[in-house]
Length: 231
Ligand code: HEC
View 1 (cartoon, helix red, strand yellow):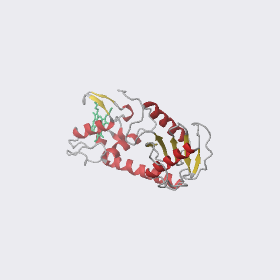
View 2 (view 1 turned 180 degrees about the vertical axis):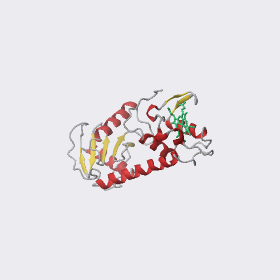
View 3 (view 1 turned 60 degrees about the vertical axis):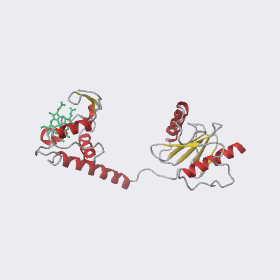
View 4 (view 1 turned 90 degrees about the horizontal axis):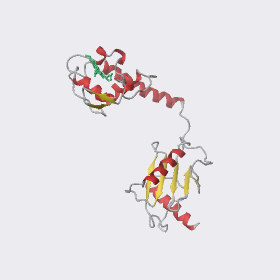
């Protein structure tokens, strides 16, 4: 029991360090936080699930088996899509879960977790409206650029040769392109066409105009099956 408390205190310390607040008890000076072992925290892509691995330093790579265990645990916790959950894999391999201010010991992945769904709900109609509006805005900007001569210098526009993004085949990327002599992504071919025929300057991969052009091209191919490498 004492060992478990120490493990939990360590988890608390790490969670507090990781910016987690609102837990039942914050580790004080008397706790043996960080004394016996270090820990490394891995977040899921949603930033709402975290796994704290004890016995691994924050700057240390997880051994393959441990990394797989963390990945499996994060995937498992994604069942609770919108919740904030922190799991700690203790030195004794026991998994402790902290969710919505409650603590569950000896969690078995895949098992039931009687958490109260509290932190986030399903997207509201208003949120969905905002998401759609943001996407529509990006696609509309791509539409504008695709029909504009401002990407190049000689007056040509993408749409003059690719009306409605025809023959852009985004679903076939990545694929080997002979003109580039390498496997290309869609953005590489966008840049290729910007260089010639448009005689413009290549766009950086994270350029907002590149993203907008890709969004417009892809939006025009909704429903087409992805066929990577197809010529
Ligand atoms: C003068 C006509 C012309 C213009 C203008 C033009 N392209 Fe192209 N584009 C072509 C041709 C021809 C090909 C076929 C090249 C190939 O696949 O070998 C092509 C290929 C592509 C491809 C790859 C298609 C595939 O089948 O894999 C993409 C993507 C593309 N263009 C995007 C654009 C974009 C974005 C613009 C504007 C920045 C643009 N193009 C402007 C003629 C044009």
